[in-house]
Length: 393
Ligand SMILES: *Cc1c(COP(=O)(O)O)cnc(C)c1O
Image 1 (cartoon, rainbow, N blue to C red):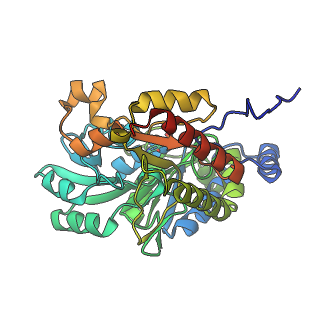
Image 2 (tube, rainbow, N blue to C red; image 1 turned 180 degrees about the horizontal axis):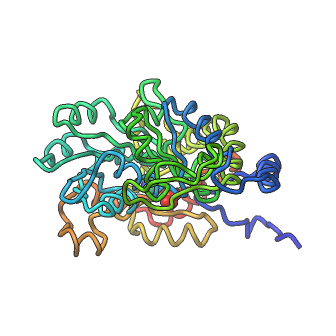
């Protein structure tokens, strides 16, 4: 029996969730009935469409976004001793992909209003050993790519976009995926489109694309289907790689999802606009600032609480929202504060003061395309009621 929703007990709203329609299910079923379950025709078809969508020459689909980041680090040649500058506010995988390759993640601070990489702080952390910058399009807002490209060019660094939040966004009219030397995406269910688990590397550099392809297939230069087509069994392993392949039925889902991406991004933007308008009159709630030159993909709707105006801390407000069925979250614990990075790389509290201060007051509110306006209003009302109880004056 379906759960009953009364006004006292409405169903909980998650912070994000996938949209799966009948045509998605049909596409997966058709792939399952075909001759190829993996490394078949749906993989290159998805890659082609994805590359077109993000305006890159090449897309390489892999089994998750973390594998995409690892492929990108390999593709650009990150190895032992290479330093890669990353923002403090990101998911651990942004740092981990550097560590996988024996490199050193160097954590830079973020801008206090956008929580995106602070270009000046990045410039101050460049050393002789710096090889690359990973820009994270936090929450779905593209970074300041003009400033980051200028730093990269000046010091001969590679610019990588961890665009896992920003599929469907753009910067000065150019789509996310075409803004850096190499860009990575995640197709996890909370992200803009999903294949269950999945990831994509996008680049217009043919050498990087070819290296990413080899790396996802054990370091072997041809795949099973290519050998079948050539009537050959011969292959050579030219470098140490991984099995980071994605299946055909996942790519069939990806193709079906990609067709709906533009309408979903528009819906995400409309929900964010509704939140922004409602919170304009709530001084305790400060939505992240959006630069005029971007189209924000709104993977997340993140606000900073002005804790000087309330008697409660973020944890209290978080717990009260969860109790009311509002599936809030916190993105993210600053990466340099994780015990692994403190113990293995000597990172310390205090090295990114802006990110650390922001971390105390950020909260992610529910945002996904299937949310109704009434759901948004319910979040706004609940936030308002909780803040009212804790107001200092
Ligand atoms: C989701 C995400 C990843 C990792 O993607 P998975 O598909 O979960 O491996 C990496 N970086 C960022 C910023 C992400 O949000």
